[in-house]
Image (cartoon, rainbow, N blue to C red; front, side, top):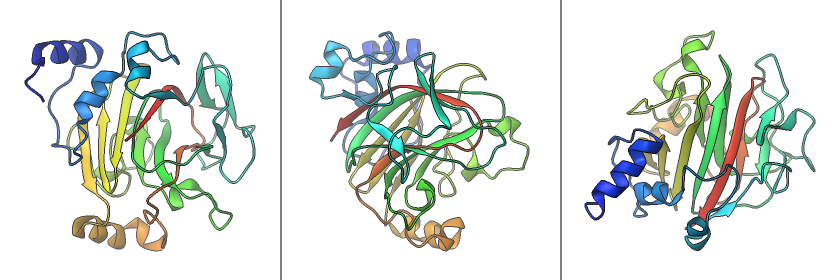
Length: 256
């Protein structure tokens, strides 16, 4: 953490999230500084004057699905709905269904959003997703910030599958998730090939795409059966629908 204005930054983070140190980020863009640019006390789904001046844009206004569409579809799929100022799923059963993706594509960016889960929920936030009819689901191409109530998931999970992980690649080094029914704040910082994941102000995962370590994990596990996973350096951001209910709001992005 930067020493300049340390007490102000620390007080803000503690009030919003209970911030503590986690894994060291790899990006040159400081994830903690980016995290502090978002004003947690602001009205949901709005941008403060400071956020606007810092270059943040709003990807969800709380009342419409503008800026989003179904993967390989046009418009909002029927399995998604707007509820209490959030994007959420109407699906049941726990099976993979239609994912949402941004209309635009992004390369280097910081993404901030809040999510809240029902018991046993499973979802994820993906990036660098390639939209193409050759693929059925966004996860076939885009790395995933895992969002899941792993404590109540019916099947055993590995650490690379729990909340805050880079799904099926990197386990979280910290587990700063909040109790069921509370809003969590997720931040994803992507700077070229360097990726940092934060949950409630704590770095849970930091990795570099195409590094020797990344290639070994990518080629030896689940993604060995998905030849185009992680191969795209620009793409859509996706909210995953895994047939369980998760609410997403306060979706803000800053291009780096």
